[in-house]
Length: 216
Image (cartoon, rainbow, N blue to C red; front, top):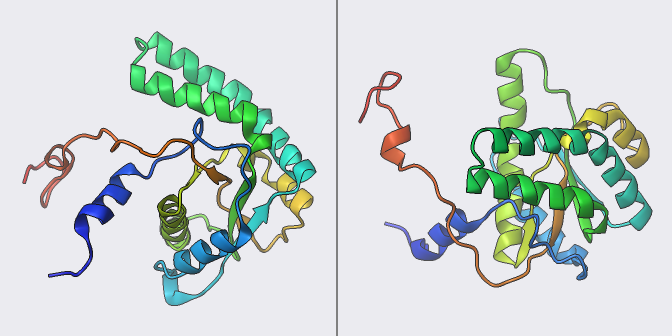
């Protein structure tokens, strides 16, 4: 048994989405709230329990604009290709909404009140084991941060397009060579008061037992 209110926890888990169009571009995000959420996120599982994860907050207007430009260098062509692929495949409404919201974020990224860059003090390595261990020590904390923010009325989105120009971003932000950027989270209070659960395939359709494609 558990004393957690499962209905509320389940609602948080099923309605925490990548927020793009519904980011409030006019309302500042207080640093103390973000630090509170980072304190919570730092309790997520970390390989070897080594605290090598760091967080860089960006709210300076010129720095945000420069980061947005790095994002757009690849983002414009990448998302236009994505839109064309969706239409060529028949224009699935869900896929179309994802692409359109991503393009919206591309156009307004410099306006978000806060950007968060998660980092780790090491390189990911070349083998599958090294990479799985590396990202497995970072991703849980980032997701915990997004959940904690969502619980406080703040939306975010995990984006990675700026990593095509990670060296330029590192020079801009003063990040040392010993640290690896993981993502860029546009962060803002979200508009509206409700998110519907994401539509996904039932667990029984995507879960196997003992062998690949062997049903439970």
